[in-house]
Length: 446
Image 1 (spheres, rainbow, N blue to C red):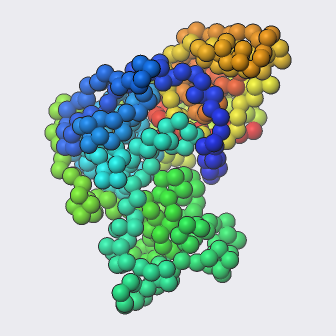
Image 2 (spheres, rainbow, N blue to C red; image 1 turned 135 degrees about the vertical axis):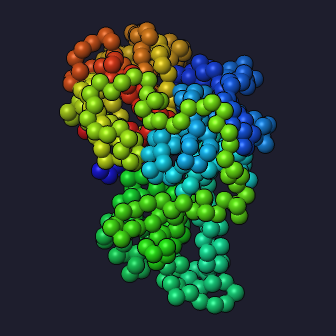
Image 3 (cartoon, helix red, strand yellow; image 1 turned 120 degrees about the vertical axis):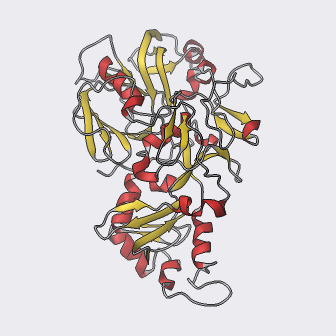
C-alpha cells in the first residue's frame, strides 16, 4: 500500500497551538550520558519567562543540545539484547513507529549529542536525530543524520558532478555517480516509469527503490539520492543522504547496516552497556491495552500506519503490510469535516478535557482554555461553548487540533458525529493509544 507523501503545511496557521498544550505538559529529560545504562528518572521542567513549561529545551548533560520534552512518548526504557543497548522515550517511540529492528535495525549506541548539534541515537542502518524545529509542524520530528555523503566519499573518494573522481582517475561505474538534469533521457525515463528526479542532487529513484522510498517517507528520513543504483555487496544498492538501500536478488529492499559498519570512523561509541535490570524490548509489552479485534501478526515487519477511511467510517491499523486490527469510527460532521492528508501521531494525552466554541451553524470557532477570548476577538457574539470532560486516549495528529480519541458519549460509530476529531470505541482507543507511538503515520482519506 502506498501512502501519499506528507503535505507541506509548515506555513499553515495552527489551531493546535491555541490549545495551550505546552502549558499542560510536565516535561521530562531523556537523560544519561553516552554509555549509561540505568533507568532514567524524570527531571523538573525548564520554564520560559511566562513560567510555562517548554516542549523542548537544552540539557547540558548532552553538550547543551535540545532534547524532547514530554509529548506523550512512552516512559519505558528497554534493553535490546541483540546489540546490548538501551532505548527509551522519544527514540523508542520513533523506532517502533518506523518498524523497530525490521527497518533501520537495532540500537548500537546510547543517546548522544551529535557533532551537528542534535540529540541522537545510532542504529545499525541510520542515526536517528531529534529535530526540535519540526515539533509543532505536520512533519515527523525525528529524521536521519546525513551520513551518506561521508560514507560514499570513503567508498569511492570525492566525486565530481561528471561522475569522475576528483583529482584524477576514473570509475567503471561512472554513470552511477553522475548527476542528470530532469530533461535528460535518464530523468525523463525515471518520471515516465513513475519514479522521482531529485532536483538537489540530479539523481533519480525508480523501480523497487522508489516504491520503498514512498512507503517509508524516504523524502523525510533518507533524504536525497546521492547516486544512481549501482552494483555493490553482491546486489544492487543506492546511496542516500541518510543511508544506503540494498535490493536483494529476490527484489526485496532493505536498509544496509552502514552505521554499524562505520561506527568507529564516525566516532560513535558502540560498546554494550549493562542491562541494570531493564526489561527486554517487546512490542506487545508496551501496549496499554489488549487488541479488541486482533487480525494479523502484531510483530510483522514494517512500519506502523493508521488508515482512516472517511467514506466507510472505518479505521485500519497496519504493521507493515499486515492488517492487525480495525474498527468503525466517527469522523467530523459538516461543517467540521475531518481534514484529509498524511499526518503523524505527534502529541498524546491519556485523558483530557476538551472545550471550545461553535457558531450558530455549528462550525467550531476556537478550541482550548482560551476559546472564549479567541471567540470574542473574532467578533462572534452568538457562540455556544462546549466542554467534554475526561476524553480518553487522545492522540493529536495535525495542526488543526484534530485527534484520535475514545468517545464514551455515543455508540453511533460508522456515522459522522464529531467536531473534526476521529471518535473510536473506548476499548479500541485504549489499545491504539499504546500500539501507536509518536511518529506513527496517519493517512486520512475520503
